Image 1: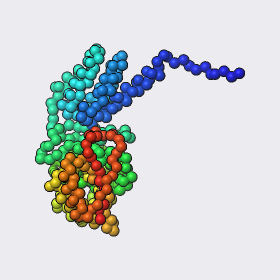
Image 2: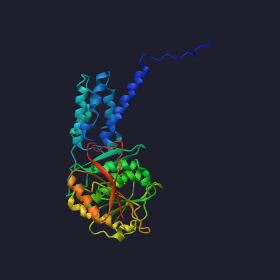
Image 3: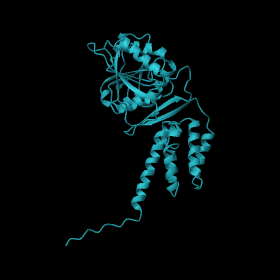
Length: 355
């Protein structure tokens, strides 16, 4: 007669404790991802934190969240805005105090440090990639500054970056041109995660181009700045697999077919460039010039992501495309919400079929 093997006795409640610690760790990581990216404070998982604090006997969850956010190495080196950190810490203290627990000195010390810090015109936001890498951007605190909205990251750029992560084959080993790169979020994500052969960031506003170049360097890519129309120089990128990166000044009204063809794009992308009816005609003019491709007249693949804020503006864009014979089809968006774009925003991606 066989007997069952003797099993070690586990301390009472051990599996439950391990499961609880795992859930607390996941919660802290959710706070980390949203905080580092400067996600709207109201969208962070405060309700889940309240539930955890009601059942927890210590303050380990709050301390873990503090370490993974305000005290995270990325935040210490590249801090978010003073206002954002102050509001975050104030809310975290409020949640902790609501439990009646003993005050946590690290929380109040962190808030004290922030309150004595002077707010600057710029701040940093960091986006954690699935492979463990991060994209850190310097952007202006104000939405509009120096006469442009291009010094901040917009939802459609985050949406397109997330779509790129899930459609890496579109970019792998190909030449990519981005129109209206802004401060570089989408392009830097593609360069880090999608292995393009070459990537050309482009914009026209001098301040945007300067900030764009600085952000590219901040993320370990070494761009070659040049005016559109010159042959791209060899990259000095340190990593052997890094793409050849170029920053080009492109004026949509002045650029020629020949200058665009010289860049040799296989793929053209743009995010949040369909928001002003006055700019749509210029954008469509650039797209039309892509019809003369660099290899036997083959036009590049084109993907445009934008938030539909005004249906009339979207209709105007469709009308302008139809007038020059450019067809389009809607591309399914990313199923997840890795980055901090507004899930309630009406964002779409169109693949344009350049004749």
